Length: 258
Image (cartoon, rainbow, N blue to C red; front, top):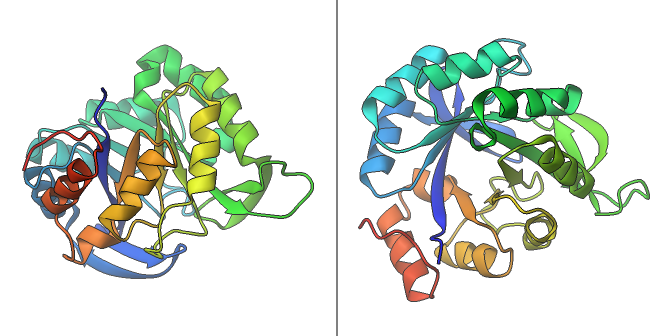
């Protein structure tokens, strides 16, 4: 049985890890490299770094930070934000990232998914998506995709976009619920399950993790392959070892590193 992955998320702004609620009221928490080392040593399976203002500011990702992380940890990590071209992907992967995440770029230029998968392999290309609940008749799934840090609505139905991205060759989808982001009230189980059962590639749940039970729920009910966590460990309330121990006790298969 495949183990479920636990992935700390480090949102980076001005070279500091930051965290907000529903993409607002962010506060700075610490140095991304130091936090990456602590989480890697603590037993996480992967890491993900989002340069959260790069796309909005129309600038490239901080490649030097990527290099520093690659020198400091020995586990896979993904990066996103400011990825605009195949050259940007190449620089991030060459700097040491295992995967690159495209979100806003994929919406405005879907061909980048197919191009990236062809050049670097599907396993290197991750689709990040930020869906928000909607009652609009144009969105049969009940969720609309947003981009640029929830600054822009796209008119894309979340489920249809996930299916299309899979067809284009993306290797993994991170489903970050805007409604749940930073709330610590639990993952969007309906959204996660809907996409997990509709595609054949791994789905990573993101947004809302507050307790180990929330992860149990998203793995069992949401059928996620991995879960991103942030606030619950950034605050020091839980360690990755504690989370994995509770998941194992609940029958969720995890890689035992504690």
